[in-house]
Structure formats: C-alpha cells, structure tokens
Image (cartoon, rainbow, N blue to C red; front, side):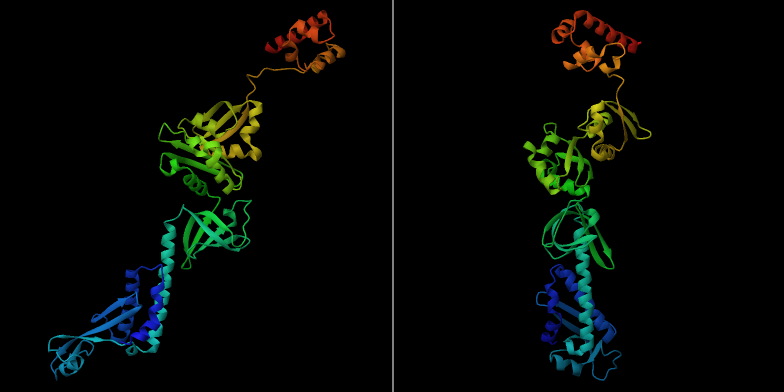
Length: 416
C-alpha cells in the first residue's frame, strides 16, 4: 500500500482532540469497509489495521490458495497456487494468502469520496461529543468570552472554542457586555438544531444563584446546608430558603458570612440584586412569616384548599410586606406556593382623635395652647397629668379639668 498517499489523505484526522482513539478507529474502518464493498462486493475477507497516532492504516486481503487449473468462482476469495507464490514463495495449497491492498487500487475518485465521507463523519462525532459533554453540564457555571453582541442574544466562546448563546431574556436587565468581556453564567439547556449543538446559558435562572452560593458557601457544597427553593426578580431581589442538617450550623448566618463576606461577592455578580436568605421550616405559618421579611406579621389566616393566605399587619408594616412595586409579596408568594393577600390590622389599635375635632366644644385658644406643647391628639393630652399640663401651659387648672373631662367622655362613647 502507498503509505505516503494515505498519510497525505487522512493524517489530519488524528488531530481531532474531541474524538477518542477507539471511536476514530471504528470510523476509519467503517469508511474503508464501505469502499471495499463497493469495489469487491464484500469486506469479509479484508483486515483493516488502523494506526490513529500516525494517521496511517493498512488493508490486507485474505484469499484461499487452490490448485492450478481448478475453477475459481470468485477471484476475490480464491487464488491459484502459481499466483500465490508470486506473493510469497512459501505458500501451499489450502493456505490463505495475505496481500496488501494499495491505495491506487481504489482509484483517485474513490479515495477523495472516502476522505469527504470521513471528514463529515468526524464532524458529526465532534458535534455529538460537544452535545453530550454539555448535556452533562446543565446546571453548572461556565465562563465564556463575548465574541459578538446582537440585539436579541450574545455569542460567547468557551476555553475550547465552543459557541455559547446568551439570550437577552437570560441577561440581567442592568447587564452590559462588550466584545472581549468574560461572562459567567449557568448552562441552562443544550439542544440539537439541524445537527448542530446549541448551548444556551443564563444569568437570570435560579440555578445560577444556587451555584454561586455553592461556590461561596462550603457548607452548601459539602451538603450540610440544603437550598430548598430560590425565587428571583433578576437584578432586583431574590429570596433563598435554606435548611441545615446540622443543628450546630446556622444556615442563614453561614450563607451571609461574617459581616456579609460571603453574600457580597454574589450580590456584585448579580448587579446588586438584594438577596434575602430565609431559614426553611415545615411550619407554614412561620415559613410565610419569614418569607415576608422584613415586615412583621400580626397574624394570618391560611386556606389550604385554595392555597391562599390572608396576612394582617400593622399599618406601618404593610408597605414593607408589599415591597417596592409589589416585589416582596410577589417573591414571597412564589417561594411559599401560597397566594398572599395583605390586610391592615386595625382592630387592636388604639383609636386616637385629633384635637381639632373638638373645636366645637373647646375654645380655639385652648387647643392652640395644648398643641404648642406637642399635644396634637386627645390621647397625647390624657397621657399627661393635670399638674403637668398646668405647669407646661398658661391654662388654669379648672380649664384643664374641663378639657380632660370632654376628651375622656369622647373615648367612653367610642367604647360603648
């Protein structure tokens, strides 16, 4: 066989890094077996020896030696003794000859066709290898360099030259990248489109935050702390429910770190996204209460059938529970799985009345005297003793008594 021609035709295929040796040998054998079947009708009596390191291969044909003059049904399978000893003088009738098949025997067109077939098969194998590799990496963080920025997506290149797609919808709203920037994201999904592997990465997926926490918090990596659930409004706010399997470990404190050392790096990576770390519990009341942090809940009523909860809070806590743009309550609902309705808790509140409401019963100059010392409401006046009011105002004791009597009477009527 002409080794030089063979090396010139096929040696470059040994350089494909993503293809293992057994697979490469199998592909080469398949290509040449196809070539042999086209030329000789069968490949059963051919041995193909592949040397992938050199990009070389040898093909040997086996034929049975028959006596001279005997009828040969297939000259591809049998050979006369006289012809056999031309190959090797020591051959005997009944033995098999081993004869090298030269590349020129196939013809130039067949070799070029085989080379093209091999090239396409190797390309398919590379694509399959990339697909399988990244399917196993779904949910992992990967870094890529920005190669091209389009309106709806970005093209990144990883360390091995593979293409990664970062859609606009999977970018944090405040993200801004230019060509050459290194971007970290999580592998969201991998799919084949028209025979090509498409690797989609994301910076908005909850899995990205989960992996960042795993990298920053050794207790999560070791399995001592488990992330039960994550909900995000990318770039704005996130809530993470964590649970510890070791009573000695505070899961919230471990995730935040000393003076926020562990969480700060994650917040910067996520463009200053506020991250609430919540201690998970099976107690729904407590879990819902924690999810609405920093608001403090007075009490709640849970409807398990409709997965709905009515939460009652003091008026000054309502805005905290709802959050800017309703973000806090929205994330709390997603985290707990309950539809949360917020109500003001006013039934236990002490009702107070502005002093101006008593203008028909108390003279204006008296009201002004009281307001001058900071008593703008009825409760504020009643909270001070008569002697204190006399001392701090220019009002007479009798006037003070009359005012207190009017104010007390009003509250007695309210209670009735």
